[in-house]
Length: 328
Image (cartoon, rainbow, N blue to C red; front, side, top):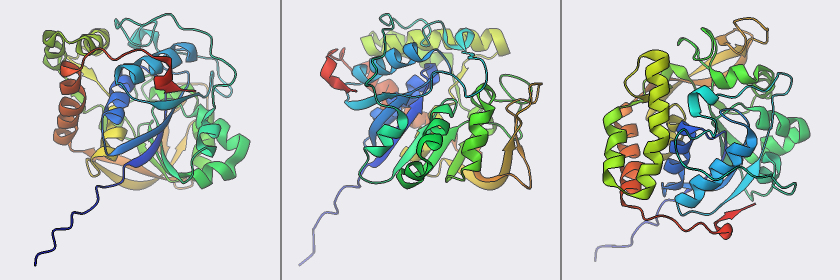
């Protein structure tokens, strides 16, 4: 008699995301929340693309529109040592372009920090950082042993090795915002994987993909398209690009579909000067060991965006906005 016992479904990968939403962050968060392969245990927000009050409001909106539940926390409000700089020109004053969002409110004191989100986990998790790594640096300062115990893998959208920077000629925005934080994280020797501009600049979302969202007429699709329209206008104005580069999608795509990125171990350091090399992540024989993404298979990534995010948005009804959907 044939054994027809079915194998149990794979256990979703538990992750915590530290992010600064941000238009490409929005797509990354939606991909994570809409992927059964991932268990989003918490989302920590920080400054970066916008101020932290906007980032928190945006994260709440994204989670609610996805119809999901997760715990939201608040990380860094400013860099460790540098003046606060945000990317309003790139992402709009709200952080989400033309997408309609309510006014940002006051963040209450009891909202959890990244280290408290990590401390709440019963077992080690994968930490995804999509903005400056200041929240992680602060967590390491507070309790490095806790971070090492709870983070089994750190995958970060940050930096550039061979590719030109997107803030200066040499530096990627997240690294440029707080190079001291990145230096601290690199020296902590966590199992870090860097998904930088060397691969992310290859993922360009075409205008036709955004207009198809608007044509569906679904509320969630139109909301996403309103954000993307601003982002595409920026890329056209800044780089003459027809479309937009959605950097933050790639770390999430690698977790959902392992193997879309190829990594090489390198030794890296980050420049801490105040001149044009500030935030440059460069190869250094004395630097920290980091797995650096060097190649990307774009087909599966585009398919994930299409099937998990855009198709969902075109079919989704407006999600109820209820306070119990997002835990703090």
